[in-house]
Amino acid sequence: MEKIIEIKELRKAYGEGDATVHALAGVNVYIERGEFVAVMGPSGSGKSTLMNILGCLDRPTSGEYILDGRDVSKLDKNELAEVRNQKLGFIFQSFNLLPRISALANVMLPMLYNAHEELSDEESRQRAIQALTSVGLENRLHHLPNQLSGGQQQRVAIARALVNRPPLLLADEPTGNLDSRSSVEIMDIMHKLHDDGTTIVMVTHEPDIALHAGRVICVKDGAILQPDGGESPCLRRD
Image 1: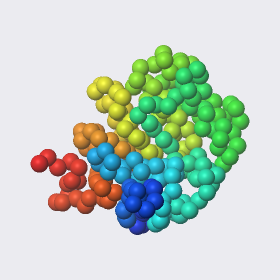
Image 2: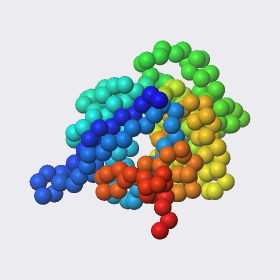
Image 3: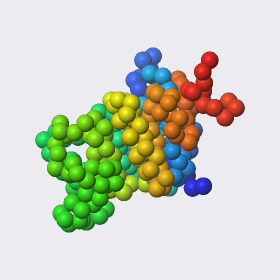
């Protein structure tokens, strides 16, 4: 299988001298195109740092991060912003929708910054409608976020993440603010996206949510813990 993510000896340190904190300590990991991977780990384990680097929101101190065949570990801020727009879709625990504009307008926003494709206003609108329809919100196009349930807001966020058709979807605690029923609905959508070929990397602290993924990466003390007997250490019940 082709690797969409390959990380080699990735290190991230904060501070200097005796105050240096090594958030990542020589991480090596790969994710194949089309995989559904969960990332777990206790608070302070380094999983958030790892996800920030995977999302091109931060750069490593050293090591390589190859994303879709390109080493992005040493790109500047403008180059990273371009990569984020073209290659990545983000889903956040807190939805991050703009409160004063409609679901449709929220989903159209990423296309305003997409220099890779020159879409007309109508083409952008139709693509946003298609994305919202794909998550079951074709009847909520003109609703404001506060007129939607938490589960519906997260569906808008998923549509927004998908509208530029990125090869990789990064989800940070996508069910963290949802009740059980809405969590099931969101995970059903994630499975459908995965079945359609989307590569998904999802951070979660919930073992039952992590079990939806095909593979669980366990992070502790800035390192990847290797599975023992096929089961991730983060899922082990001692």
